[in-house]
Length: 112
Length: 114
Image 1 (cartoon, each protein chain N blue to C red):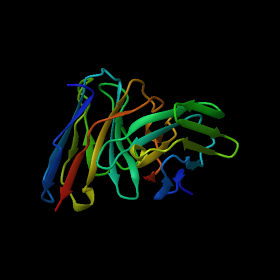
Image 2: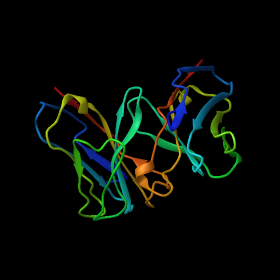
Image 3: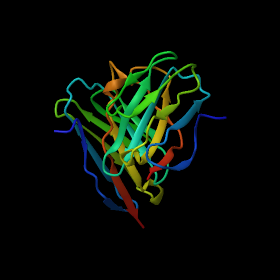
């Protein structure tokens, strides 16, 4: 099993709907997660971080972390065409940068 | 300079040639990282540096070397390029080390090895 797994997509969602992106991980030691967004041909940029079980909301974005089930999700409400991008899930390396692992990303497409 | 800059933007290189990818940050971040990104494989860590004067190996270090002589610069060298090193290379930095902080990425270098 890969350490971090994401559905590669593409995930197609109509404009205005809720987009749900999921990430599962194998390392029970992971304590927090980052979600990065990457537009085609551009570099990744952080959109959300979550450090404890439960939900964290920031505008139209909600990150959900469930340590018992070892998954983290990102919900995007009122999806806009500008949300079309690849979303990368990443547990931090906590004790060592050598342990940094990114998921391969889920490509999201918002259709008008 | 604002944030992280990388040079060159893109490069076509003959196999066997030596190449150095440059990365400079002006945020005074302690940690810096080099990743490669290939279709379907996501970002893979090549090398990292927690602070000036120290470096470490990531997931895919073979064929690459780095140095960290000062806080701002973190060059990545391919001693003898091979076609499998064709990829997009991203440099990143973070305030703290250990990979627990937000990483800020440079614009990337697209490298093609023929």
